[in-house]
Image (cartoon, rainbow, N blue to C red; front, side, top):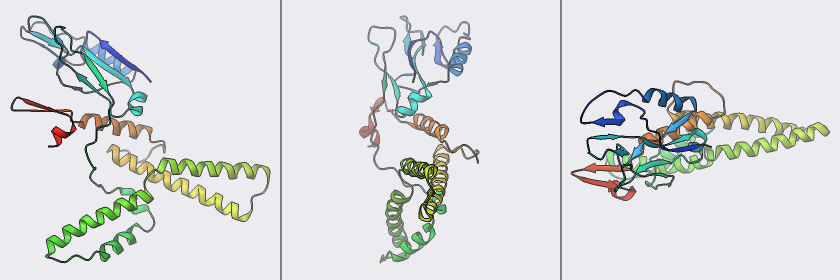
Length: 263
């Protein structure tokens, strides 16, 4: 894992440099971007300020300071963000790299495409929907039944599509144990049947896990790929960083933190 930080004396694009005097346009962003790309580094969005360096005359400012992180770092701490603090008497704003897990409340339930591939899903939904008894006018009944089916699907998801990686690892360990036993002696019919069942379950759960990763990463253009979903998790982490809301400004007031923003 790599974390590089400091004053790079360069910007990523021309919009990260501003001068009221105009003057020549610097092209230092070209080699700087090449350095970032060649080393597979990730530049997190900056919160708090648009620029990190301010000239004493107040006419020039740039974003010269930043954290650059490796993909492994962002996978280990997917909620990382860099925040610029008040600079005081210095011409540079201090930067803080934060990895706090912020609680934005319960996430909305979204249907996963892999649900329809789970045996018994269609029957479960039909039977649950028919079992809900609600009195009232049509719109109210529909709204209440949607709330009920949402709760039922959350519980169903916990049992059929949650913690898939750990379930796959457990199956792989059992498969390895059967393989090792088969190397030493003939497996019984029951053990052979179990071996075939475990192999089928690994394949099924791996496809389900890959489908979830593809959907969450929104890389819908990629129809086939390696069952290893590291790429998709990195895409998902990047989308979360881009969509993260750290500060809201309006009417001259800045709101920072989960509770003020939610309100």
